[in-house]
Image (cartoon, rainbow over all chains, first blue to last red; front, side, top):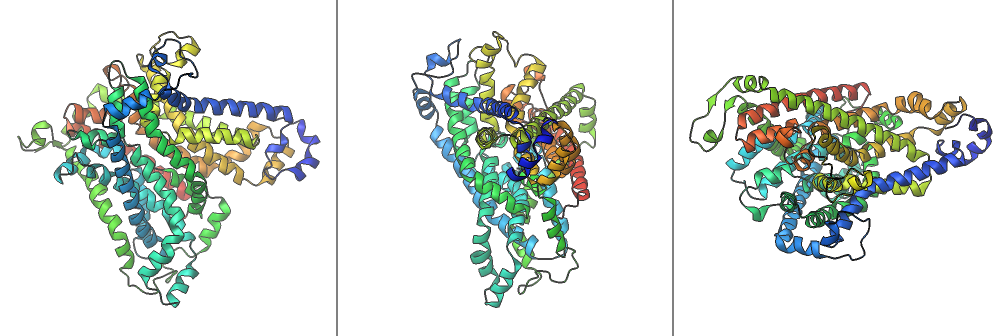
Length: 297
Length: 326
């Protein structure tokens, strides 16, 4: 930004801006900055665009030496191949099932725990909170080996349970930590009022507190959902022989893991796998931001 | 996973003050105390969480440590041979292995490169966002949201495809012919770095942007009246005020990038040619599940756990110093 602009601007500045940053830039600079921004946005979005584009391209265009930036003959061939060749629909359903189970279970358990650490004072409370924070830092991937044996010992290997349980454990500390802010934001007067009116503790918990914390639960769930949906390591390690219980990443790798990958198939499968997260993200991102704001209070 | 802690520190200072205004010490008599319900009510609420965490987090950590002291290969797994205690045997074997040190060094350097690039890109774009009007800002935000939401595995496949020597657009645009990015060690790491930065800068950007917006306008006006330029404003005004946010984001990035698995595994085909692109996580996985040396894999896991524990302690210390209320 230009120092020379400063003397000319003050009068206009105070009337014009709330942010205090934008108005100090003279027009041509702002225009340049905006062009750069749009360019970067295009660059950042390009991989996703290319993924969707390649999923719709006919096979001949994908395998051409001179890739073009659009296609005149969009086709669903790749998607058809993906959905028929492998049991893709089944994998998709498995992924949904695992993510759904983790989201519901972790939301309920985390809600109870967050209530306990915010609405009560008890010994070890601070210790517990630090432990929850530390638990978030545990490198999940390092626990693959003992987790593998644990799942084998309880006979969960090769079943969806072997994906649900670890993800539940790994998303809980974060969910509790995040929900804490939402529960805290509910005024205590409300609680006292409820008890004066004769509500029992569980009635207060489920009929008053729970609906109030729901937006926070949604925000928290997004993270549980995404981390579970995106999981690759456990899906690869714990579902070994029972391929009917595999999840989406494995289906994706089937197309990818060969000498000559079927790029159309890979991109179509990637699109199908990315879409739910993307939709989820865009739908809740406003709520997410306000939710995070809530977590901050 | 770790966004919330990031957000927790996004809190503008005033909010933290009001929070701290309430009695927080454990000794405060019944702050919001149970009007009814005994001393055991909180533990009742905590029970499901504690059971799950004890069984599926604490116990595996204990197991990890235990296995790293045992001899544990395919024979022991199938029950053919009894397990035997090795003491520090696995660790001495690991530490005398040149490959382990090479992988450790690669992991540290790669994570450092990722963290620095992510922070630079994220902060620069956050500053850029504050100087443009709504439409370009929305465009960049949406694009970043897309990159953020993309699962690691699909991001990896797409980036490999973009840089594919035969059919990818990047080599065409750059005129590199059929140069293979995954063949050379450094170019393969660079490729993974691009993908990691692409999918992790949005968090930094959005968080820092929110932080900048929370800085009072008067402060920035005063800076510009004093004749501070962009760089000077950033260095002397914004960076110190954003310090708490930047600390959190940096530590989160370190933790993420240190344990990157999916990208390396998918993009370099399980660690690259002759394991040239291995990082600790993939190394542990390969040791355990590809060559059945579960105890060596666990030892690598323990090393990783300890390093990240160190980072976490540092994080807690910085958080405390920033006056965060727990």
